Image (tube, rainbow, N blue to C red):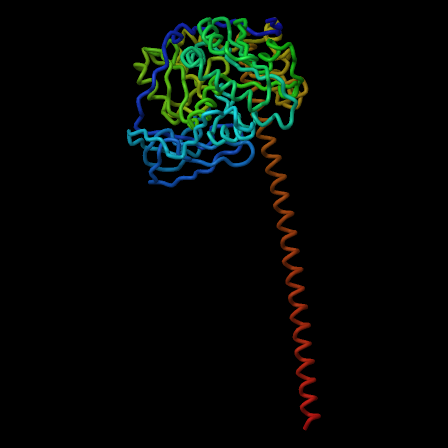
Length: 495
């Protein structure tokens, strides 16, 4: 199959050999699970349990709220110990609303499972609803509720499903192992999603540094028409959604648009596996595969982990660290986020835990720009990273937007190649965060104004009703007085 060249990108040392040969192992049950109610993009789920309640594996813990949201389910059976704030798996380390569950060790499934022998006999809307009920989100790290994507058939003319098996981030091997060990289940989930989307063509992109995954996925897919496994060049960020689509189809997604605008939907291989489990077995998303790696980890591994498991439990199972890590990261080293603490839990979007040594991070002080244009050449989006960073430094956020900030995919290629070690992508993340905060503040002001206007209207309505009641009472009193006078006059006349 012909591939199409994309601009930019880099070739970082992938260091996947640390864990690539490690089969997926199920992590022993931790003593406590801390399950945040917000593990997806969109509105946080609303807790549906109370302290002291006994739950079984798969029971609903928190109900989704609004159109962009996902429910949260119990990863195992046990007792709810509390609902409160707990440090989030986020660089800020701020606390978020979290349900704490103490496992009973029996791991009993709920009796509310709804498996399906033939998902292809279901209506597409029913498939999407079951995916929504299972709380499945994009497991490549985006955490966008998957059912929302499966319902795009109602708004767009779709023709192709693209499956992201690139796993282009260094160190990470969990998708590679999942495709090797569960190829049939992943292909089944992919076909179910294609059925829900109503598309007849599916392309599965896998980088060429995963030959075993390519071979096993081809063998699993060969019996099905319209499903093709495609080898991709090993080049970061090949797993970026828009660049993956362009490489496979030659179609470029317009700025600020979705791939659905050109008829294509993208999902991750781990998401496909979760869809298989939800439709075939009735299992909600309560666990995922995580790579634990880095030079400081004693025994790198790929682990199947319950959602809510503390990061420290993963590191302990891997034998701890051989030296004090210079940096702890959730996800890959290019787009991952610093871990504020090993107390934080694994969430639906966690695909890696990295403990990197000082040699691996090779941190150097920031220098002055030498105008080499390496960042421009490396940017896969065709942007001017140095110019955007310069504007962000002086607070010209609107200026950064004008020259393409919102088209930046934050892949970090520019920072990687910068000889002056300028943390370019951090400037962009800062600018995006500030813009998001401004937008939230603006929305808050508009909401306050709307509520004030509603209150004024409500008060005016109350005054109007009160006036009408008073006038009514006056009319009734006058009528009663008139009737009384008439009765008195009649009595007097009769006398």
